[in-house]
Image 1 (cartoon, one colour):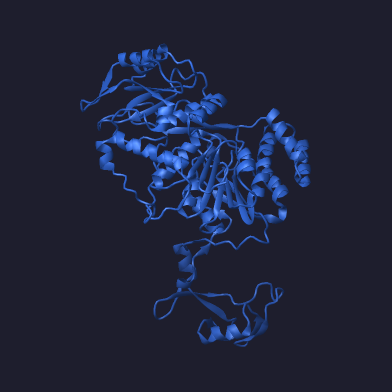
Image 2: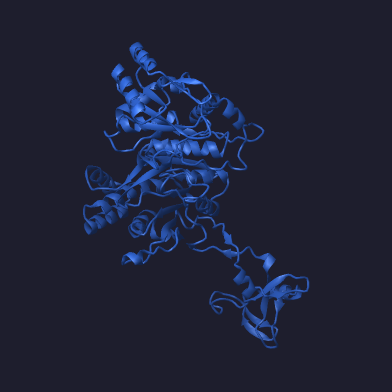
Length: 575
């Protein structure tokens, strides 16, 4: 295992094979919610094209079948007999259905997450109310009910007007976040976050002022529980009570003028100044962090993306700088982004190349100069061939990512109309233009394939076509590409309309597509803001506009270095 790493693949296998026991300080996971919906990534395209293209990022649907039966057998046979009995009881209650398949998948992974947590570590599991009650039972079985810490309610949206359509339910506006400790007795104290007081609260509570203008309130000094918790009893200013503080400390407070008796015989009170308090301690109901809306600056187009501030709150409260965070369903990488910003080490896992590439681009855009490892993605021709043999669609998506192109129509397999990817570019200030990407993983590439791509380019009114092949093209194929002619941009520069690119050449950096682009178009609809404290390596936007191909090549090579270099903490000096 290496910190600051992204892993492509099934998180169950990666957890078992790559992450050692008790090596992680904090886990955040936002798994699919079993909502019976196919979430699509919506990529906003430039003006003048279709409203959006869709990519199925993951199927949030689980069915009872061979895989579920196999994973359930593992659960029954694993050493934790409490978990075995719990899962068998759930199966008897629920039957062999989608919910049980979902819980089986989650239980196996939660067992591994429990294993990799340090004794002082903790876990936040983000879910919605459709599955939260079942997941809490599973968590109680794996972590122990005594290690349950909190159920946090996050208000993610405002109240809907579903009643107008005759809804029978109260408006659903919240998600649930379960917080568990590996061992509650070893869990460090929470780093309590605070919220600002409202103007109404200040006016009501801190209405008193000293002569110097310091605002204060009169707070309770009596002990909670009327002495049942061992607080001392004595007389203070003629009043006998159980007090919060011992007599010696109380006398010191009186001498400092911090104890006030509002009237003769009244119970003394503590003079608490506004400038000495941090604010309102945030509890287990979070209504101060809005979800990401369509206008949010940080919005990347990922459907289940969570706000950066939400992840920062959890990470800051439950870990320290230098600790390691693990996100086994990292999606678009918000937890990873927050961990990097807060100077934590991190490990992210996802089952799609699309998500891993999304996180790579996000980190490189937000933290120029960052280095990290990427495991499981092809780094050479042999590993590319291996991926193509295992899953041709994942191979196509990965190949598109080499060109920063958008995979086309996700999992509409066999219905791509000759299009595997789309890329938009802009070579003047008036409109965006389209590039069609065709990816071939087989050994039998031929002239008709080049001719077909030319037809698709014309049909789609695209400017260019990129033919990406795992096998070296033949001389007749290159001749056919030349016959397609050239695209001439508004500045008079000409580029081959059909360009043949090999996987080997793209990986080695010896081949690159040729066109002029005024916009850096990645997989995300928006790029994250560059973090203010990120290392600045001086990517020159002016140089990019004047020589975009050179800069794109440099960025691509930089990403390749990031995938292979050992992770290290860069400083401005080393940068």
